[in-house]
Amino acid sequence: MDTPEHDTIESSTQDRHQRLGSRRAVLVVHGPGAVRTVELGPGEEVVIGRLGDLAIADPSLSRRHARFSFDAAGVLVRDLGSRNGTHVRGVRVSEARLASGAAVSLGEVTITISVLSPGAPLLPGGIATEEHLFGRLEACCAAEAAFRRPFAVLYVRSLEPSLDVVSWLPEVRRCFRAEDTIAVYGRRVLAAVLPGASPAAARALARAVVDASAAPLAVGVAAHGHGPFERLDLARRMAARADEGLRVPLDDEQPEQDAPIVQSAQMKEVFALAQKVAASDLPVLILGETGVGKDVLAQAIHGASARADRPMRAVNCAAIADSLLEAHLFGSARGAFSGADQTRPGVFEAADGGTLFLDEVAELSPRAQAALLRVLETGRLRRVGGSDEIEVDVRILSATHADLDARVAEGSFREDLRFRLNPLVIHVPPLRERPEDLDALVSHFLTREAQIAGVPRPALDPEARARLRAHAWPGNVRELRNVILRALLLAGADAVIESRHLPPSVAEAGAPTADQALRARLERHEAELIREALVQARGNRREAAERLQIPVRTLAHKIQKLGIKEGYRAP
Image (cartoon, rainbow, N blue to C red; front, side):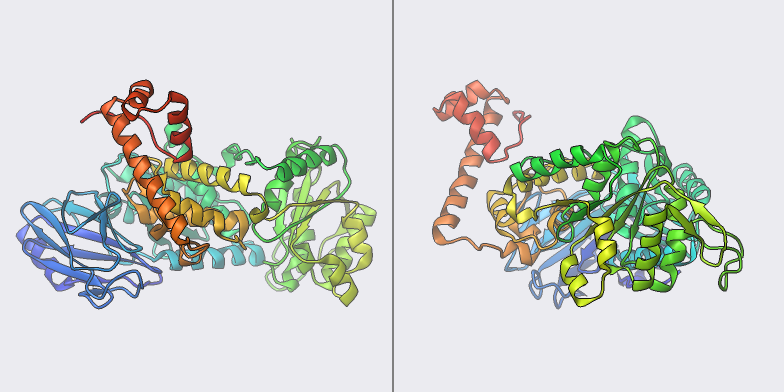
């Protein structure tokens, strides 16, 4: 297994702690592009900052940001006069005592705490960073597309909120092979990439993980999906099904796709058009910027068509080398090229009777364009290296963010193929042009991802919401989802997502004027007053409205506008 960056402070003291059988604390530090572990024995301490004992190159940290110490009472964190502060559950603190399972935010760096009892195994080495995990995902996807080499993704999460990943990782680590890549993906989550693993092998390993741990775990297995993030997201969604009593959900159980989030008039018109074109077998060309949701629209068209009970296959034409794309699309005969030890069908045959979605179709090579045109005109294909023609019945949906007219004019895309692909055209507008969908998507992602992570859904600070609305979203819905995932991770146990939890490109978007900043502070103060009134009224809106001397209808409007969570109870 490749060894990623993995730092342990005072590693020479670990044997001593083990021999003495003392309690110890493990700090799991989620920094930029790396996950590090810090182990503290009784009476030991560590300073974390840009130039501390554990140096992290993150501009949100001060040089010496905070000191963590461990004694008989547990872990104590002291802020060392940092610029961005030390936060516990969203509250800035100068000093705080931390229980096992707590999360601390130092700027944009999140640290989770685990206190291990005497004799508990040490956190094993060889834990990958998230960056390394994504790199391995991309490499496995490329190998799968080029050489049909299978791989799978596991998403392991604790079903018990109090059990940090550090407490059960040593038990399950032994189940993995040397070539597998595993990474801490959250306070209660482990993600793993299994290169070369067949679906059956991945399922067996997942069941071994569940059986190996005394902690209640759920494991989602994804052995299909054409992209790295899609594969990981599918494993996440499968793991979330554990609430239905499935300990090892599998991706071939066909989980229901999330319903499209449609609030704006533009997207309602787009999906209404999709419903109309679904009744036809004509090809559809979907246009729109990267990450705008062209694949979601393609799935909606297939799902509303008469072919819905037949397979849908997807190919990213830009992700497969030109020399291998034809074999991937049309299949290959035995002996067609080096390594072709048997006849293999392509995705056209796999989608027979159903739908084939060609994403990034503008990136097809001239040779692949000619072969595709022939299949569209004749309904027949010939495998690479083969002589027999095979009849296929496939509806083509294609998508691109490129200007096909410009590609035709410059000679890089065939005009006759363009005519074959675009008898029906649907344009998906960018996210920045439909703010109603932005708010709905933010709410959806917060709810879904918090549920998958097994944490309470955090509220969204008014200033953070304003920054999300001001951002141009060049990556559209895909970028928004990644921003929300990042914010949830950095917020940790905090009850509110703030601007500091957003990436700099988003946090600095539409920097508020003095009036806007004042309005945001007033909204935060107003939200705090409403929360306090709800606590005093034990969640009764009418009583809370009387305390605030406002109508109940006004209170309900403010609760919705300010994103205030209810369910408050008096202490």
